[in-house]
Image (cartoon, rainbow, N blue to C red; front, side, top):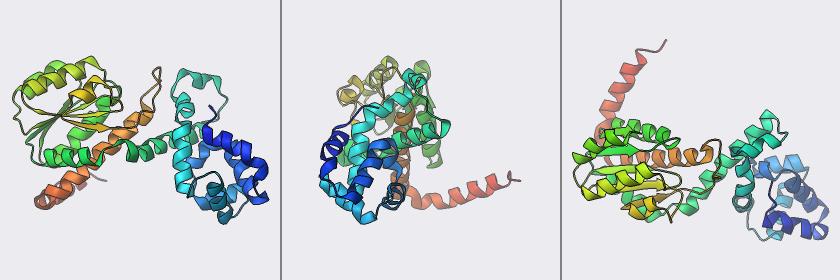
Length: 284
């Protein structure tokens, strides 16, 4: 795992810490990948220190709280933890449970980092735009297609005419029939996938609003979008799967779904209840 600035700082200051603070520091240095998943109480138990010692330790390294320390450490370890999503994983001797811990930590880091990457202004704009749309298209290829299907299903439940596909040719006639108030949501972690970029360009030609979910604010897709929604950039290029990126995508889609429901959901309560009753008929 790559050494981070904050871990180096802890090592350099170790001799100046109190005995209790050293217990916390040594545990952090030994198990940095586990820290983002721990509460103050859990770390105190693992390090055999008091919760007050953890607070003092965090302040010693220049952070106001353990929560902020976890976030700072998670950000710095992102590059190192990304190796769990690459072929270099084969070079480790991690146990299955250790890998579970690392994957969970990476996913949690992705969600926490979203607070800093997503523009609240663009998100609010996205919710307002989706709320008045009639048709919503979701397009993504590879790992992003899973998120597209999830989005299509959720917004179909809200009464929208929604479609998801990984087929460029399938989406063209749907976009052709879209109105200016309708929305095409393009999902691409890199923002460089050719089919996604070309479909976004066609939608703009038709006057349809293009919303992008991507991790790169310098990508062609981000620059094309009327409403860009930025997720954390924590994947390596040669990855074995878009693990953390898909977590970020699904979380963002869930947030859009809940926010739109909050605006238009009053008249949906009866259909939701009717659907629930019908599906319960199939339960054993």
